Amino acid sequence: MTDALLVETRTADTAAWWRQAAVYQIYPRSFADANGDGLGDIPGILSRVDYLEKLGIDAVWLSPFYPSALADGGYDVADYRDVDPRLGTLEDFDAMVAVLHARGIRVVVDIVPNHTSDLHEWFQEALAAGRGSAARERFIFREGKGENGELPPTDWVSVFGGSAWERVEDGQWYFHNFAVEQPDLNWDNPEVREDFLTTLRFWSDRGVDGFRIDVAHMLTKDLSEPLPSRAELDAIPRDGNHPLIDRDDVHEIYAEWRRVFDEYDPPRTAVAEAWVSTPERRAKYASAEGLGQAFNFDLLVADFDAEEFRTIIADNLAQSDTTGSSTTWVLSNHDVTRHATRYGLPALNGRHVKQGTEWVAAGGPDEGIDREQGLRRAHAATLLLLGLPGSTYLYQGEELGLQEVAEITPEERQDPTFFRGGEFDGLGRDGCRVPLPWTASGPSFGFGAVEAHLPQPAWFAAFAADVEAADPSSTLSLYREALRLRRVLQADESLQWIETGRADVLRFARPNGWQVVTNFGTEPFDLGADATDVVLGAVDGGAVPGESTVWIAPAGLIG
Ligand code: GLC
Image 1 (cartoon, rainbow, N blue to C red):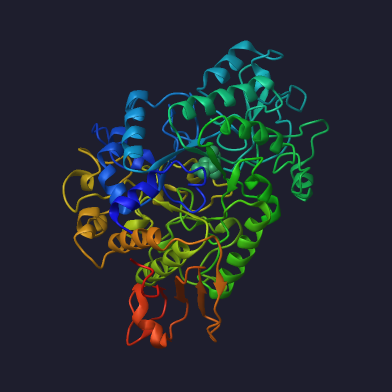
Image 2: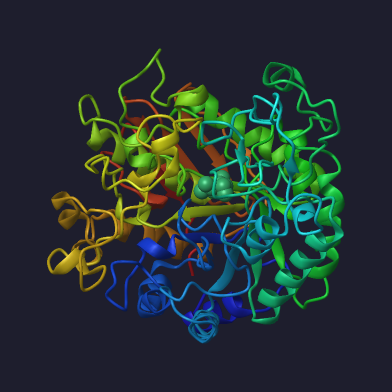
């Protein structure tokens, strides 16, 4: 395909652009700082558009850039229809969208509907208006227990640890699933519903192509009395009627949102962040009458293991056949330990990925982490992902092979989960949110003119974008080549497994003959005559080395 044709394909306004898109997640406050205040910003993103274009992604997803006191990295939103003044203005945002669109890159923004910031005007109004007021009805206020209401209404704990209730001055309590500064909205209130439709239209009118919906499975609640205890709550199955999680009635909201998305041409897209119990439950979020797509985190929590990968891939492709959506593949995001580090963790009970409440523990002490192995496996897994049908979500910095940063002192940490414990035990999530190194030298490695808001370790120099751009064997060069070839080779959304005779080697072909071979083991896997058709990844003496992936394309497929 000629370059001109490629550009045309990329910018064509097809309604299905998202189905097999490579989406790059930007955590704006840690991407690039243009105004020299130590915090990344929108003009910073604009200044790196060449980099994004060269990387070869189809869309960017921006984590929240709205006004926020940063009690939870911006997921505490004080105003849904504005830009944090430290990050720029609405005009800067419009300029960014225009430039990205001109380069064929679509824009997805984060919507945080479960809770606001306690600084949101609605919550401030609710505090001032007092008990029984309409303003309090937008949130979840209850009287406490005990003689003087001094005990929380229930013993429920928040996801970030500690009580899920906080007492206000006049003695009432409000419910917060996450940090104290993130009061949950009351989705039974029509005003709340209406306001989010306004927000969706606000950004859609500004040319935003899609939305990522934060904790999409928690909005609706059944808080009728008597409220269950924590133990009772934990025992209730999460199959549609749980009081707090993944309730069937949440889909009424998304059906309404879908009607808004479909007012636009092309229709706006949405992807649900929904940590639900089964792929079947997830499918409801991905339905065409709802959000249309849902994150599939199965590989993110899987070990680097051929059998696990194969089962997950097969299950999710089967699932997307039934919903008509396309599946999503994710290995890293702003909430979890970077996969280059995760895959190098020492085995725990035979697994390299911690499970249960422990798996997100970020960073950790250096002892026992094999970073070379981690990076090798990360390359292998990423190349496999990029060969799969469906869309892939990449997290800023993984294209540099960045490792999790453990060297952040308690005083420097920002993540509320570090301070409150909760489900995200360990070091919290700051280690994957350290600002990117753009240059090997200079203040904050080229991130901005001054020290970055989270400390960057000295070893970041070796991972700097300018160093890697000049090195054909770098992770950045690998990502660029993979994303370039992916566009050329992209095929219909299906695959056929090819038996390899090895339990630790996966091989599949896409309908056009593009093949992906991943060797999860350590013994080389011989490719025979196909070795000559390898277009990506290194073969050694005609074999795929251990812990690596190659792409094979028959002659003629690459024009
Ligand atoms: C989502 C976000 C996470 C945030 C939480 C509460 O899980 O990805 O970063 O802390 O929601 O908004």
